[in-house]
Amino acid sequence: MPSDLSRNRSGLIQRALIGLSILLGSFAVHAQTNSSWPRETIRIVVSFTPGGAPDTLARVLAEDWQKTLGVPILVDNRPGHGGNIGADLVAKSNPDGYTLLIGTVGIHAINGALYEKLPYDPIADFTPISFLASTPNVLIVNKQLGVQSLKELITLAKSKPNELTFGSSGTGTSIHMSGELFKDLAGVQIRHIPYKGRAQSLPDLVSGRISMLFDNLASAQPLIRANEVIALGVTTLKRSPSAPDIPTLAEQGLRGFEAVSWFSLMAPAKLPKEIQARLNQLTVQTLSKPEIRSRLSNGGLDPNPGSPEELSRYIQQEASKWRKIVQQSGARAE
Image 1 (cartoon, rainbow, N blue to C red):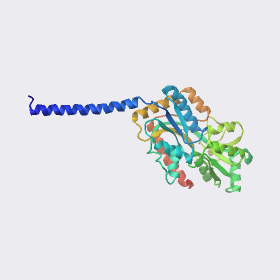
Image 2 (tube, rainbow, N blue to C red; image 1 turned 60 degrees about the vertical axis):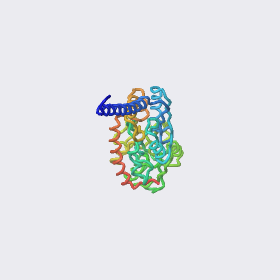
Image 3 (cartoon, one colour; image 1 turned 90 degrees about the horizontal axis):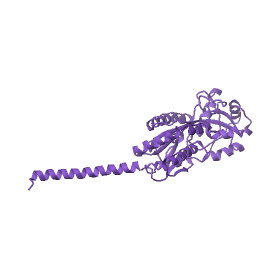
Image 4 (tube, rainbow, N blue to C red; image 1 turned 30 degrees about the horizontal axis):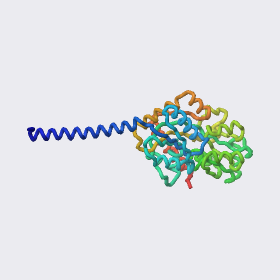
């Protein structure tokens, strides 16, 4: 018969083996769950209407990933409230890699300062995946306004305080804040008319119901090339390679005017590291393909994917920058 010591030792070993078996089993299940991703439809939420730069990027990713992964990729447009509706939906979704968001400068860097209260935290409630692309904004006016230059527009606006209007694709977007920055630097009073998205604002601009609009250059170029609107200037400090004939607002007298629209891929907070890494790998692979880079560049977008850590640092920098601009402009969301 075994001694008490032997029995105790045997019992300890047995319990240790059982505990180890359970632990290894949980690791195996966790690894199996993540290694088998994706097994079902992936949804990419776009917080704006179809046709704009965020929607374009989502569809480029969806098209390429569907070929690579062999599962359906759904682009889900959820416009409204300056991007907050779609962002809130993703923030409250399961962090399993099946619900993603096209992040924007408005959602992650502006809205936190502009809105008194948000239903989500623009930074803490999301897992960064990768920077996607950026594009200048461009100031466009309707042809019936009778101006051909930035100087003429400012002169007209000063002669008619609060009579001219500028539209945006939603309160808190970089489009809206470009208009607020323009008001401040040009010393003019123009009224803001927010829309749910560019699909609603552009027809009103072309018809003359609103006077002017800041839009992503990537989205506005078809109208500019068709001569349906007049482009007065881009919002970067240097001219855009995709539209070198359009001067910057800064070089026309609005010194320091800079407002870039950028886009990222985000997931809900607490996304497993393995899925985060896989999504980052997929994104970098897609946006590094020459044919896709050329397609986006021709549309006015500058693709520049990177690591989650780089994106996280950039968002922090942008949030600090735009917080100061929002405070200086006095803008507040309704």
